[in-house]
Image (cartoon, rainbow, N blue to C red; front, side):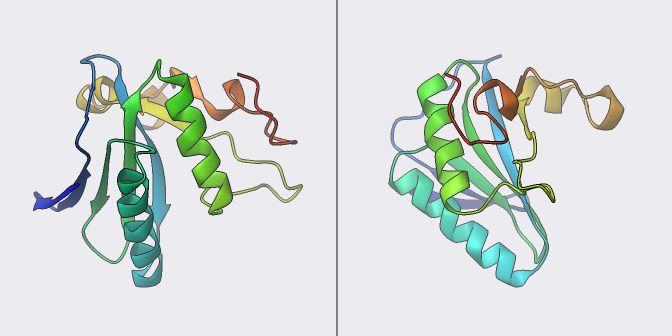
Amino acid sequence: MEVLDFGGWRFFIGDDSNFIKGKVGKWMYFFRDQEGRKFTEERCREVVEKEIVQEAKLSIGPEGVACFYLNIDDIEGHKRIIQYFIDHDMIRRTKTGKLYNISFKLDDQTRAGEYGEDFKAELKLEELINLSTGEWLV
C-alpha cells in the first residue's frame, strides 16, 4: 500500500487498482472533528490494507470527508465495504434504527458538478441491503 498527500488529500492506494473509466465512484463518510478524522484515517488505511477496497482518500483537516473507491458494477466490493461500514458504525441510523439510505457517487458525476438537487444517485444503499433489517438483497 502507498500513502500519498496531494492537493489537500491523503490517498491510500492498494496494489491492484482496476478502475474502469465511467464506472468508478465512491461511498463517502463525513467526519466533524480531529477525533473523527483520526478514526476515519484508521479506517481508510485498514480497508486498503485488507483489500476491502483498492483506494481510499481522506481530506486533510479536522473536519471533512473520506471516499472509498470501487466500480459501480462490483457487487461483491460493495458488499465488503458496506459490511465494513456497518461493523464500524459508519452509516448513521434514523431514530427508529433504520440505516440512512446513503448514495454511491460516480466520479463522472463529481466532475460534472452534480451536487445537491442536481445529484441523482445511480446506486443507493437500499438497492443492496434492507435498511430496516440489515439483510442483503444481492
